[in-house]
Image (cartoon, rainbow, N blue to C red; front, side):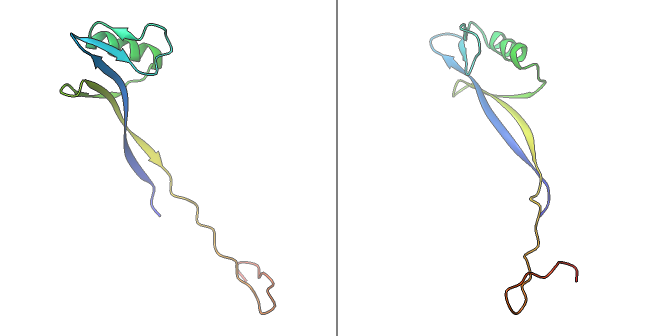
Length: 93
């Protein structure tokens, strides 16, 4: 099997109508509602200190973080070989 990169999206903020108020989801601070989109993005960056790409969905009022996740292929273990009486043979003989 081959190693693969998967695209990952995580919802980080939602707009609270009316106006331009945004709620930072899973915020460690008690104050999780911000008065503008730039304020919520800055608060997310201050908490996680990661340079990430953002996906804005203005019609849904959502902000997502996008990235890639590396998934290594599983290590394939050879099936054991048995002899006539059910004994395991050593591999490579």
